[in-house]
Length: 500
Ligand code: ADP
Image (cartoon, rainbow, N blue to C red; front, side, top):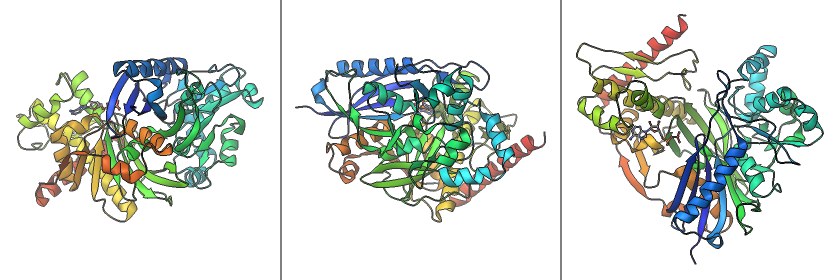
């Protein structure tokens, strides 16, 4: 009989159902986008009921596409956009408000207020959660719903309302309201979870005024969460759950301390496995839980670049320089010799680690009369490489040793010029796997390991295949000169934002 693991990848813009076989290969995939709402400046919402409906639809269509039968599905894994907060009534299953998405900045002022009221609070929160006080994380979003939706706080205090990230919402619905749970990796992005004790933190719940009764049970990422009562006629076990970046790290088989991946999606996210003992970064990186499996919890350091692939989208959509993002490689190659002195800093919404300046804006330096569109496109692509170098150096400093290899995924990792340049400028081997759907793969691996579909992590490592390894080819002096130019451009960008 054929046997598969179903991975539900609940992303920010689309939901995908992906089926994996014993070889770890994808046998069927179906994706569908869903609506985003922008009700006010800086606000981003989604409709939880639509997400649930789309989940059902993509599963059904992926099954139909490859003629997969219910009996052939051994287990289900879930991975999700993290931090997005949903509050719903556990009696009726109705959300009391739209999902407040991770990008939503409506609680930024409240976060500033918390820090102004008590200058020591940030250090306390950082020590407990590994995060900064920021509207990005779920905690202040839950508080906002309780404070702003009529009657919500009373209903929550009576025990009628519950909270979850999107994983918990999908799981609760899939199990017909029987399972209200999440995994360590998702819990660690809420600003309410103590990553050392592995418990919801009473002090933080008090600070944010969120009743403990609302919170999901936190489990290992690989283990039994519940069985399906909806969509399928059979009871299929749900045995894997992890936030998207953690799932991608697991999907890249970064199972050992010091193993790192970089996802080149809309944003760029670098994570490094730091093993079983968490520590705080000196370079503005967050500390987060990677996953819990077989009684062990492993931690990651993480850095986000807000603009990575989105800078290519900007060339395509606003500058009209490209028809499709992959065309960037063709034009950049025509620029022949590197950047011709042109540098682009993609600070559309500020600069994150290691610079942390939310007022910086994108800039282009070094334009001459002979500068062409090709040079600009090349400079934009190279900016992704330089950002990787900045982060890579910050990680290496925190870890006290240089990382030896960087595994890559996400849409823009298919750009060979970008990957070679990144390898050159960082001076590290870059490994691109055959299967770049690493997020979905990670959730499938977590689910499959829990039911013996795969024996152990070693078996998964053996099955992972590599497409290309990009090796550094650039002379050291060229690397140093180019990177010096980037740092100079960064300094000038920061100066522009500071001198307001
Ligand atoms: P997300 O999961 O964040 O939606 P994806 O991993 O699907 O993102 O990657 C999409 C991003 O990658 C887009 O921003 C797009 O501009 C960029 N991209 C895709 N292919 C290429 C390519 N060949 N060269 C450069 N950028 C690319």
